[in-house]
Amino acid sequence: MSQFQSLREYEIFIYTLPERFPNLLYSTLVVARRGRYLAELKGDVAFPGGYRLAVYERLTWDAGPPTIEGYSYEAWRENEKLYWYDSQPHPTDPALASTHPHHKHIPPDIKHNRIPAPGLSFTPPNLPSLIEEIESILSGSG
Image (cartoon, rainbow, N blue to C red; front, top):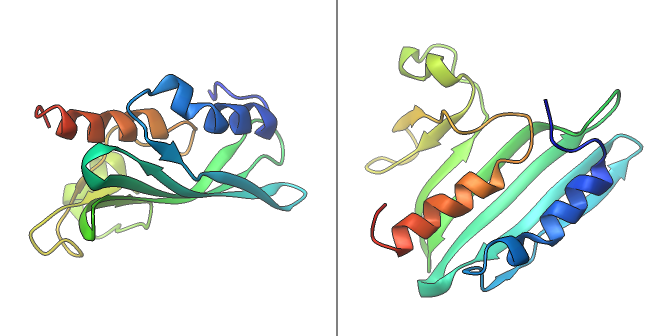
């Protein structure tokens, strides 16, 4: 069950992320409506040390609360992509079955090296756990 009953509630959550996470340097996240029941969330969330999270979510809310139809979350340090999450299905990979289709791409061979992503779902919000993951890297515990 989503904690957001409308796209407007999710927008307020997105635009107040810097208040909830004081380590954020800035956010360029924008929710843009693309139709009556379709919107996209795009932008970056910046952290100290050159870290940033590039965010894309495709959102729908036809018959109820907002749902994430698809997403990509990329963690960067300067110009180096550290890892990313996406919802592209890989039904023939049994290692990902526990969280299908949610998974994380990690080095080495970042494009093909995938692991389950138990913290992600199509029910927003995913961003708090992603922000906390980068904050744990910054604190040296991740």
